Image 1 (cartoon, helix red, strand yellow):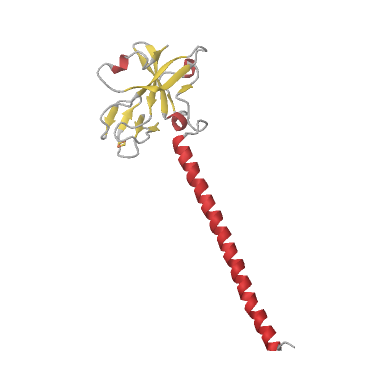
Image 2: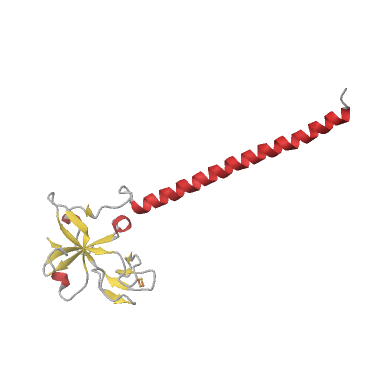
Length: 182
Ligand code: FES
């Protein structure tokens, strides 16, 4: 006949051991899950780096509406966030000229803002200011805002091609493709 104390002792000893293995199993499973998750995130980040998600990348070319929508003196700001582009219309030698300014500051590359009350683009980083047609007026920016190529699409809309950039150089404002006239 077993000694009662002995049986109780065996039961007490078994319980912590089972709990220990259960906890160890749980910790192992959590560790594996965490490692799997981290590996998945790492793999996704690497894949995102090497294979850009085309759906998230804005097109190099986009349409900006019809020239009639751009009265002289108008600065269109709605393409800033997606395309970093300002569309500007202004009077030039009796005609209306439309350009697509690159919103990137020519100092160190911050994105400029349009300041309606001052009638100029302002850079939030070091205070450069540019006129409504992109000429550098103040601050450390060394040259005017760059221009994207602009043309008329077949349907008559303005079409901006961000793959082609016109940077300042003497006579640049007359370079074909850097503006359209209506
Ligand atoms: S980046 Fe615009 S002023 Fe420096």
